[in-house]
Image (cartoon, rainbow, N blue to C red; front, top):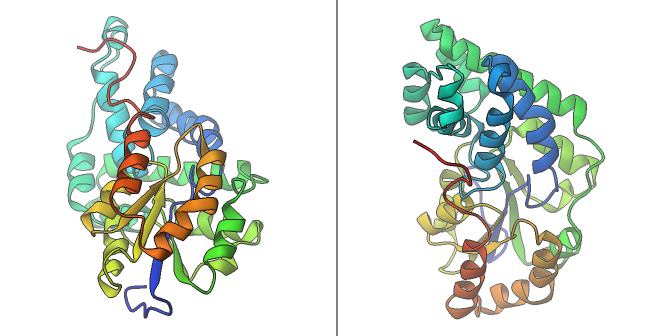
Length: 287
């Protein structure tokens, strides 16, 4: 992927879960969260664990971050809940997991397997078991979820004008399966999931294109941060208004990107609307 040679004058990166597909709710509520509760013995506070995980992964400015930092943040919020302390549940976040999340750039199962093999650390092994269980549940459970309306039409409108990549924190196997299932894999030059690198790393490809010729489409603040770090433009798919966001992109966003009127006031307006979608703090009291 890093040997990518531009075929067109423009580059478009597209996030997948919650942006291209309406899969965020089903993946987290039916796959991630049950495995988190089971693996980390949170049955006694399952209500609060579910609320914390949903807040981190779906309803806050952390939405869309890699699963491993999201797991850590979920546990951190649980540590701060008075109700959890009142029940005598001691939430521990292993130091080895914290260090691995902080230092590893390719936060995926292959890198975690390597760390487990090298260290034999039981906490990293437990995290790997959790992540593999999540993948197995996603593969078994998530199917038949079509792309958001107007996504396919947007890809068709960009075809022949821009190089398109999937830029996601989801594992590559799941990405390939979902994009192939719905016949849209053919539109993108590459699938860049968590094993390839972070979104910030993948969007370094913007250096191969002229200024304001790279656009990231995403539904989470982390997508915007990755774009901003690489001086790329950003088009938000607002959570809760995905259909409207894609229709707007099809009707006006693509044309503005291609004709050079996207940067500036237009993008500022989009970002202001996007910032209002997701809170930074949870609705419950913390200590």
